[in-house]
Image (cartoon, rainbow, N blue to C red; front, side, top):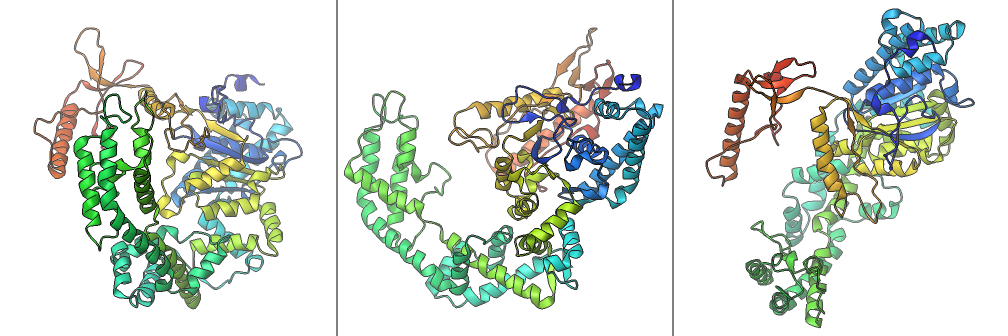
Amino acid sequence: MTDHAAASPPMPESARPRPDIAMSHALDPLHLPLKGSHLIEASAGTGKTWTIAALYLRLVLGHGEAGTQASRPLQPGEILVMTFTRAATRELSDRIRARLAHAARCFRGEPEALASADGLLAELMSAHPEGETRAQAAWRLDLAAQGMDEAAVHTIDAWCQRMLREHAFDSQCLFEEELIADEQALLEDAVRDYWRQEVYPLPSGMAQVVLDAYAHPGALQQALKPLLGLDWRGHEALHTQLRSQPLHAWMQGPLQERSALMTRAKTELPALVPIAVDWVLKHRGKGQAFDARKIVLKSMEKRRETWLAWCARPDDHQAPFKAADGGFTVTMLSRDHLQRTVQADAEMPDIPADIAHFFELTEALQALPPLSLTLRQHALAGVAARMQWLKRRTGQFSFSDMIERLDRALHSEHGEVLRQRILAQYPAALIDEFQDTSPQQFRLFDALYRVQDNDPAQVLLLIGDPKQSIYGFRGADIHSYLQARLATEGRHHMLATNHRSSQALVQAVNLLFQQAEDRPGQGAFRFRQDGQNPVPFVPVDAKGRRERWGRREASASGGLLPLPAITLHVDAPLRKAAATQRQLAAAAAETLVNWLNDPDTGFLHDDGRWQRLQPSDVAVLVRSGHE
């Protein structure tokens, strides 16, 4: 290694292996095998974009295992990079371009560039000896940087559109169709048509059931919108049945089943509920099975009244499993709840026949699928079919249609030919923000790169963080991420150091979530089951902001009194929600104004420099814009 390379600063800590991570290997971007499929988990602030640019750099240099695609230098047009938004593609493309250009200057030996070369770049330079080899690498990097305008950095939708256009004959798509970015108007038309054709003709009783679930077409539209991309493959028989039956025929069976159970329950429960309540109270208290702190006498009496009142209302077909007063629900009388209230030194008492009968009836009521689900199934099939008909009639197609068509083409008779053409075009793919992919999108990637096969002839890097999956309203599904995690078992990597936030904040977040992770049950993110946890909480190290927040003391020592993010003192009683919001908002504003007016409130840097708090330092998070 040359002297200037040896003097280069080390690569970020998040790129170095950490042996204490059991679920995933800490990512080493210099030695990650650029072959097959890998999952890279990157929490916020852990250097994800730096890592993507570093891996891209290696692909351009051909810094991969001999005999694999990555062992030959790739052009930007051969490296597919996909992310979720157009803004993200621009930022990612700019960062990669800057990384390539800086690396080219380093490989040419420019002193100014060498002074800021990191450890990974120094290692790559050492793999290219000075002379012709390094000069060729510099030329290759410079060419790649200049060619980034033609690079394959796309949103998933834009890439699908490009593939359908370039492979129109293979995918059997029309050249002349019009792409529509927003299907809202089509969806409104399709829902109104469905409502007119299916809901209007219903008899009054059944129509009321529909209106109880969805009061108007707009409510049904909101319920259907996130479901329209669901795949019916594997459920063709159900789809055919839904499309062949009118709504009244589809709902007839569930309505009859519900009516029969409701009639039976309202007949038998008036006698069983008092017996069940008395039995629970009999076994409650010191020396008994049930913990009196978890079974409150007044609450039990109220639940008795709730059940009996429901039984007396013949037209009420919604069992009272949710209390209108927002308090304890009638599930306090359920078998599962009572089991959880059994004291540590006791056992569940023997269950008499009438109590068992009570449990059987209430559990059957609770297991009834809501009628809104029955309606939603039928409406989903009908509205989706209507939307496709409307688009065919007008020669239009949407982004979701593009994904579906490309996926369908890959699974067709000639799909393997199309697949091989696309793989030849893009032997390497990096999918950023992978946690935000929909089931339909993941199925497409899997059809192309066959994630579980881990084929060394191509490179697929899935990069994301399940904790940041926020686009459920646009079809993102955390279970797609979990499916990919299972398919890449043994090839999980993570970035283990936060370079953005202060040490105090990282430590606080680690402590909060670690406590939730260590508790018995489902874990911090509620995915642990039967000892397996596909979304564990793994603490990260902190190498980010070093300044400390607090109030400067006036003493000669010049110490710093740490301050919490915000502390509110409210003297007035907090009762109603609206008044409470106003009082807390006023208290928060007063606290912030006091801090901003105080020259001794701010940040102390490691070098002793004092930075007074500025308005731009403050972020106030609320639930809604109105707040």
